[in-house]
Image (cartoon, rainbow, N blue to C red; front, side, top):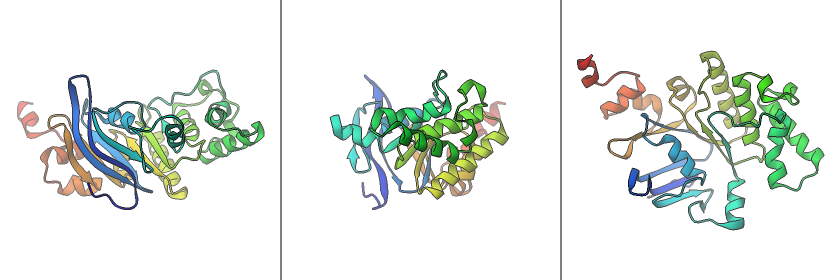
Length: 259
């Protein structure tokens, strides 16, 4: 697959599955440096599974995933550790440690992966919390703040090591529309001000149209990518009926006739 020079992630011939079950096969796509890239698809299409492959949690049945030039499917030892420090991950429910303050949560990746003095780690953690609007809440426990604030704190932790790529798994899940819109603005501001590449899995159409530069759409039936491009353009002009129905939040014709 020919890929642009600014591709920070290259996925080639990726087949995902478990044992004899194949979920997706022969996926090819790139993520360009500095873009907000969204992975879409219906329930059970493998969106979160694809993200977990891209961060090295799952081993593919076949294919390559290159992140910042390193094949994550083959890297081992120190090379793998160095590559993983170049990415940050925010998991769907935030995954903050409830017994630790926000400062301690954000500081944790620095404690694990660096030899910095405690004062420097605290300064970095406070700066990350400030970036997401939580500078005044460093000493709060996760249970003492709202769900939207917990998502922001999880993003701050994912950015602790100053990653090249930030992966977000359903960042708006469980949030009300106003809080979700505020989180969208934060994500877009971070991407633009820090020149950061962001890969997100989401099913929230409002978020997709508000912040995504490009999307791919996974189709469970064909086990393939059925669309790749600007979400607004795909919504209006895709030649694939399911893609238009999905992005326009409309039922397919067969469903309308059965209603």
